[in-house]
Image (cartoon, rainbow, N blue to C red; front, side):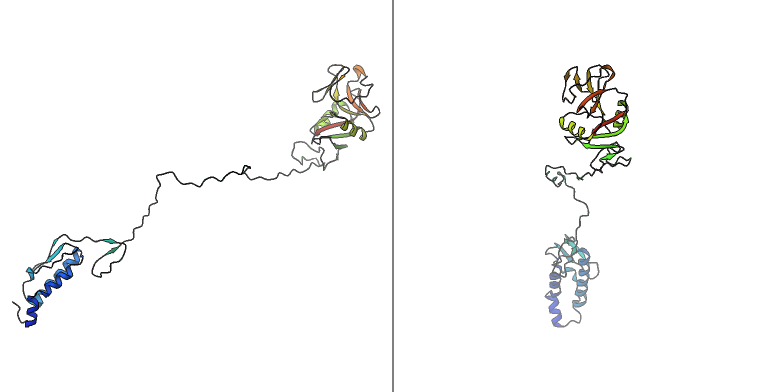
Length: 295
């Protein structure tokens, strides 16, 4: 059965030395392809080296794989038992005979939280207006025919415009209105219209301080904003407030002691420096006037 083998070779074959190698080798974890290839190699070695039928030699490929390798010299080697499946490992095996597949798993999908989305809390309010604040700069009104300060009127009094178009501007006592002492002669109604250009009307004088300031600046009669044309003896300022009812003065009293005295022919009020106060005069006469407008 062993042909021309030497005594030592025949002894090794009898002791199953090759079969032992088969069992040791097949004890590693093998996949199907590698096991089949290894089986063919073992059977060929047994056939060539020992010259006997190797069908009775068990590969003993047990171990971790649970598979047995067997075969004969004439047929295809067969594998019985459960074959190991390729394993996925994140690290490399230290055994060079154990096939491994290194796979790096990367989840390309974006994770979606099923809970409430985390958001940054809003900044705490400092109690001040968080909007961008800018300091508004208003150009002063000038005597140039333009509305420099954007209030809708032209050439009215301002710190930068103390005099314009024959009118001198004087800041009132409470500093929220201006008087305009104008020199172009007009009747009472026309004077009201001219004061409207400054955004105001003929002057309403409400205190002794303003009265004293104006009297110091005028040297002749000037219209002011009071009349009794609607009802003789019932004097009203141009803003609608009552100034006098017969002999009763309402509010500040700037009348000269002998005024008003013109009856039904003198129904408009004037500032009369000669009498150091207010007097009545005919509304159609032409004279200078005092306006008042908001600062």
